[in-house]
Image 1 (cartoon, rainbow, N blue to C red):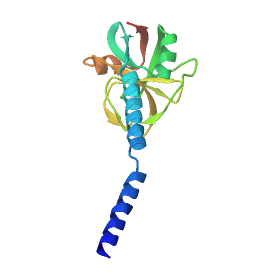
Image 2: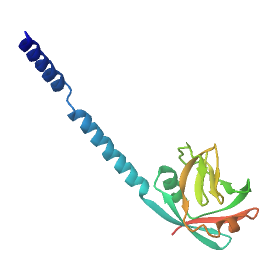
Image 3: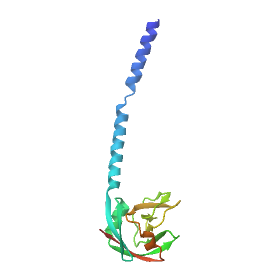
Image 4: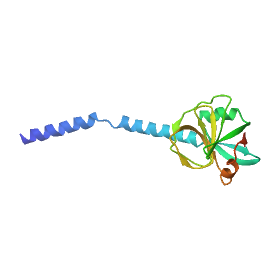
Length: 161
């Protein structure tokens, strides 16, 4: 009787382990990892631009996304950017851009973002926010950015480097 139970137990274990084929799960995980790597690689492709503010040039890198691709088609573009909240400059664009507004939480000095789908924003101070933005890129050399942008309204030109 003990041998019959043991034999039955071994057969049941063999049946159960043969039913749980891990290959499809592993393939799904591998495929997902490959897709994530490709998406990450796309996001890491940065587009160099110059931002001229009151005759001072700042270098920026824009992310490779639909919003920045649409913006780049409009370059060079010059606009008057208005002061808001003592930490940012903004200007409404004449045309809407594709957007993917996400909760950002923290804003960093030099962040370039799109609010809604038609408001271009450059931040010159770090702070926390509950607003949603589409991330466009970052100004690389932020040393004089706050000083340059802390005046009331400024003329800003975006151009391909």
